[in-house]
Image (cartoon, rainbow, N blue to C red; front, side, top):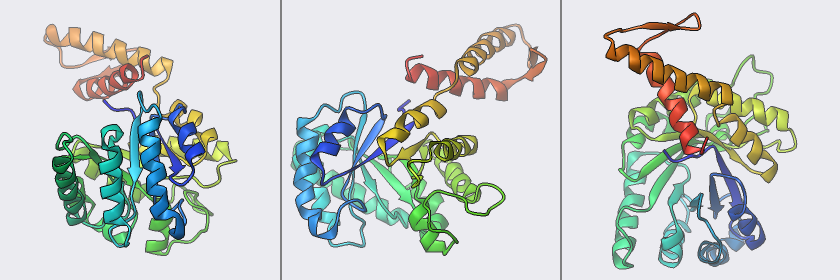
Length: 299
């Protein structure tokens, strides 16, 4: 299991912030060429990202680059320069505004050609697809199965809000809504991703000074089935890691369920009681996920 408890956004035009990202406690850092880089700095930022990939130590974390979208003039140049220049250190490419399975297929095909022409292992670089438009949501099921390279789907609340014309100007927050405003959107993505056996990440929470609000947003995402959440500021990293890491009590309970139910199965039992709760095959699957996440985190 790859941990993606926290995906840290780092502007591709800022070498100092990219270095700090490589040294952070985030499971994944995405070196961003899209929204965090001004249009007149995007081409030059490619060189900065390649430098960061090659010079900094990315061991122990997922190194990702978010390229500009297919609807821009920068996409092909981003992909060619980044993969040719820093492909050895690159784990995944993040595709913003994935609107159809064809978008993912195009990225997959270009990656294969670049890898082949540069002596890289074909298929080694994964894809992370952002679902952040109404069209992307309509096609999310097909997108989830579009490529064997796909590692995760990511909900983008900012662009999605604009796409569906939802009320509010604060990304990731629920203003005057009696619940989680993106409950449906996130869970629809979760269902598609789980069917395709890939991960799901919730997007940014813009009020980075409000760590209580960010924690609540993380907990909502976890409850809906997400594996992690974006951090747009280093102060958010520890909160995301804490929320998306099973607690000591959950780990102990999960391991106990696995041990006792496995023993019960050997004895021909289909369901048992542990601490007054019924435990069956479904409970075992839930417990195994908790234990797997704990082991991936070294706990």
